[in-house]
Every structure is written in C-alpha cells, then in structure tokens.
Length: 112
Image (tube, rainbow, N blue to C red; front, top):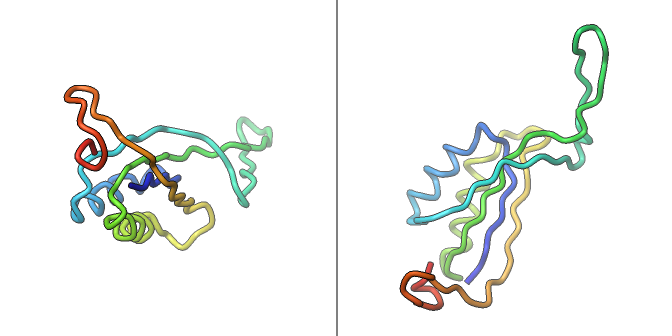
C-alpha cells in the first residue's frame, strides 16, 4: 500500500477529487494548510502599506491506495492540479506498513 500526500492550490480541489473518483479512489482526507516553496510568498498592499505574505493557502490531500493504483492516482492528481504556473504544488508517495479499519478490525488493503 502507498500513501499519497499532495499539496495543491485550493481552487483545484474539485478537479482533483473528480479525477480520483474516475479512477476508483473512494476516500481521502483534505486539510487546509499554509506554506511556501520556491515562491517564497508574495507582497500585497493593504490600506497603503506593503506587507509580505509568507505562507500561502494550500490544500493537502492524503489518500491510501494499493500499490497497483498508486501510479494512476499520482498521475490523475498531477494532471488535474497542474496550471503550469509557479506554486502548483507537490506530490509525495510513502509506503504504508498496515491499515486497520476500526469498526470491523479488517487489516491490509481491505481496510482501505
């Protein structure tokens, strides 16, 4: 099993959710997060004063998929989240040792 963590622009969430649904991904966890990468934030002017916004709003998706589904899920996220502009985000793939469904005690891939 693999855990895919993706940091994307907030307005791309629905597109990514739809793309994952089309390939059969059934569940995900979504968190609103803030951060920066190479962008290093940006400056804004508010009431005549310029200030730097260091942390930009992003959305973090977490999904756990079978090894066979990992490549398709990663590709779907990348295609749906890409705008071609700086700050599109990142996708991280991690190994998952085990998964346990609390309600039924099912383990492994049947638990996801």
